[in-house]
Image 1 (cartoon, rainbow, N blue to C red):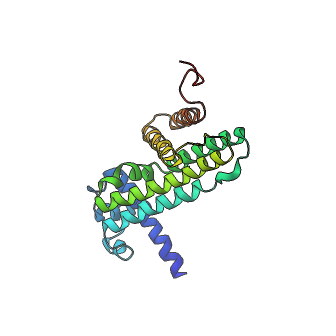
Image 2: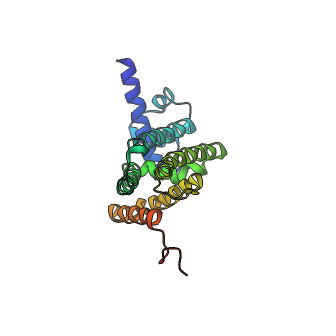
Image 3: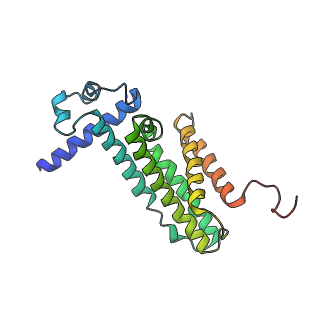
Length: 206
């Protein structure tokens, strides 16, 4: 039971810290702000975390873990036809946006706050970016193996390009009056770009 209570208290602190960091920004947030959000004293905080930076690292890592686990719910090898593959990519896009949108505070910290904290945190975000690229690349590799995508496709950089578009979309979703509508437009646009391109021709005519 003590261990359960300890974890519950840590989760409570992380939840409060996520909100305060998102509202005030990392550099403007103090331990007192997080304690005030929880309605507790400073001593409670230091029983579980070393300092402000320590809790911020835990907030970012927990957010990254939840998003990564969520994205792995859609196995890359699931699609066996082009139609299934396109539907799968669309579902993955929905899942990506929903995982971020489920906590706008968490999304804001990952996208805006974390890279600006310091160099070590920036490197942590870059490692998460590489991991995200690997997850997306797995879908492209499956597409190549099944003949859905061209053989000479650079899956590594294409995956990063797709993720960059998705992150750009997430920024717009964060501040949209109608997040669902904006999310749907971004998903459809990215899927269409991947499968249909933007050329008005079939690529063989000028």
